[in-house]
Amino acid sequence: MKISELLKQDKVTLSFEVFPPKTSSSYESVARATQEIAALRPDFMSVTYGAGGGTSEHTVNIAADLRKKYDVTVLTHLTCVSSTREHVAKMVQKYKENGIENILALRGDIPEGGAPHSDYHYAAELVRDIKSQGDFCIGGACYPEGHVEAANKTEDILHLKEKVEAGCEFLTTQMFFDNNIMYNFLYRIREKGITVPVIAGIMPVTNVNQIKRITSMSGTYLPERFKAIVDRFGDNPAAMKQAGVIYATEQIIDLIANGVNHIHVYSMNKPEIAAGIQASLSEILG
Ligand code: FAD
Image (cartoon, rainbow, N blue to C red):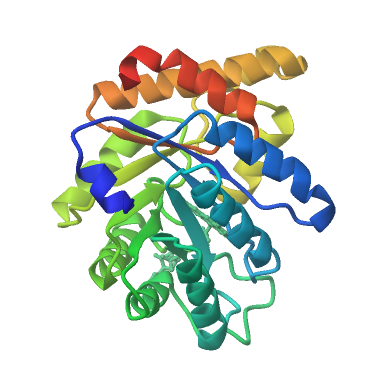
């Protein structure tokens, strides 16, 4: 099913993300986690793509299994930084051969020292290329706190609009821990005429190292209420995991209560986290 069709329905959607293994030796454990998450019957699952394409075979295989073996709608990511147009065309063809209808078109992070062999500068160029190669539903990334490279949020939103005009039918947000940031972002993009559905990306933070990584990489704002949880439970992995799942669930309930109907959980290949969130929302999801 095309995700654009799914998002048109008048219902709350819950989706989960998996990422491919970095080495073939860990493929089996990721495949098992994927199967367990698929058994929860989410509205769709996304499979990330290693920037530079190093793990692209795994992305294709996991996505193909989701669709063919587990009958789950799949959103397959594709990045273009450091890629040639030939390589992108080859990947799009592989997605097509595996019946993949939904692609999240991303630029990817620019490697240190630049991306000298890249035919692409921005994700919008990839969106146009994919669109010219078949009948895909294409999504893009967006950043409620602004993308790290953007001079300011206004410019970032103008570039986002160009990406949508290039052919993005929906957007998925970068993680955020304060819903007011999302509400403000939605107001600002709607004001600028971006009308496509926006899926809220929620990251359940379940260990302290994860938080350190997040804040150092993306500078995501951590509210005091969230920091207090980390201070109190950070040394106790089981308690931190429980608190992280509850914090994410509360965020999701508030989002749905305020009309944000589409939720994507960065479930980090952890079926128990996906299951915990889904169980707490059973009545809300209907
Ligand atoms: P773009 O939309 O190209 O934007 C990048 C920057 O360029 C922004 O600052 C934007 O304002 C600016 N810009 C855009 N157009 C122009 C223009 N014409 N002129 C000047 N500036 C411009 N990374 C992976 O490697 N693999 C994944 O699977 C992956 N999945 C992701 C999923 C989501 C939901 C999100 C939010 C991010 C994901 N990322 C992934 C990370 C992403 O690749 C990086 O954040 C990357 O730095 C930006 O990608 P983008 O597609 O948003 O880029």
